[in-house]
Image 1: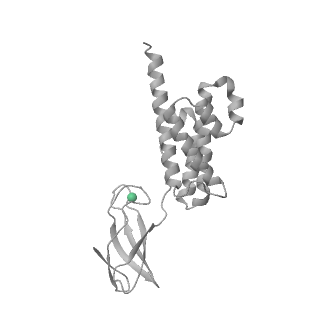
Image 2: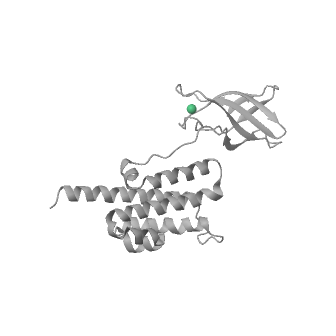
Image 3: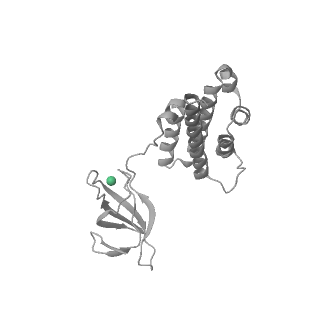
Length: 216
Ligand SMILES: [Zn+2]
């Protein structure tokens, strides 16, 4: 329990405090300054202990009388937006994927949860098609026009990439359609499957590089 006081002289015990700085995005235990109550809301002003950051932000709580412990909403001040780091190889294979993924990620961090999935779905399409075109340069135009599901089925040879990309595409399509086919699966699952697709594409291209460099 962490004890805080408000500028009005009230005291509260907090059972939970933010564990990540919204500015430097490091895992932290914030230093608490003071609280402010308004109706059933408690806003707690705190700052990042990281010397290179030190930014002040607010943690948002709900008061639930008669419970003496305010409930942390999980929300803090919106700080700086994060971007996802992709390897040089992935940037090389599809810079469009990296660009679209980051735009979707920005939308997600702005709580635009209904539309970021469509962005992730688009990013996936660019990744798969750019990756496939690398090995099927002569069929570039055909691949560009073919539906993502068919590209995965007919042009992706690696079974691990095919398996995760196919499932990512299923969930991605759910983000764009009126009716959800995969109840119980969500945006986090889509992102995990895209992560796996990225991972296996990296592994596959890296393995191929060595096989070409060092033929048997
Ligand atoms: Zn910080």
